[in-house]
Length: 370
Image (cartoon, rainbow, N blue to C red):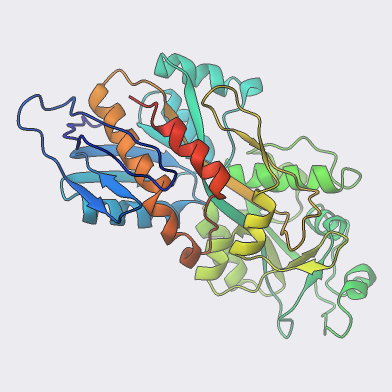
């Protein structure tokens, strides 16, 4: 990991949640630089030096925007993020190779991830929800601009039980649509992916009869029938170039690729994917982490009005206390920015910002990082 020199601003930090935090420079004992910017409701406390993170491709567009925004506010700060996938990000974080990880799934105690992170940190690791990312079912089907699927149809398509676009069950949900008789080309993630785990968790929760497998980050090739592509970028590109295709991808990639997306009918009528419909579903999640850890349990069977049920929450995974106080301060300052000022950039990128009640908890947890 690159060394980090921190010169953090100290003073009142006004957050949207009316919390206050004060950070001092651990990397420069004399003449620390102070650089606070922002609006009356949110201020940015700057660090200088280099900070490295890695992981989730689903949050790539969000974190790139945050890095740009934080860099403009803090000219001496350089944040690097390598979008290698959630699995690789968590692995490199637990090995101490990066300061924080991005993941589409919280640390899994049953797989030893929480214990490995505890050993690396020497303190309690934190799962910090940062972005609500709808998982879009993007497709390419000539002449079909509106497509509605139910949870069981989604499960049957991806597991190969339904293989033709004009299958009677699909046609029944899409009266008037000119569905071709061609084969459905399923595209899935070939790399270790939190998006895959979230998608599979949705299928297992909504249609266990057709998807009895245990959700995981890296088993897509064994449970889905189709072709695998690496990373969110690879899936989106494959859908865009393959007629008759359908795949799961974080919504911002569907937006950026101008891909049509499926409306899901969970029993109360079709719901299109959007930042508002995703936020409605996220508000129905509950915190299951202990202490300052904020891992969530999503309600994939939500019946909330206008809720798009197929969502993921991307986390930033960090230590409560770092061996280097300078790195800890930099992580705290950057993540405070992402959880407050940075949330305003999400809607235009195809993400949904944190519900206010959850945002308050995230900011409070970040304030504990040192």
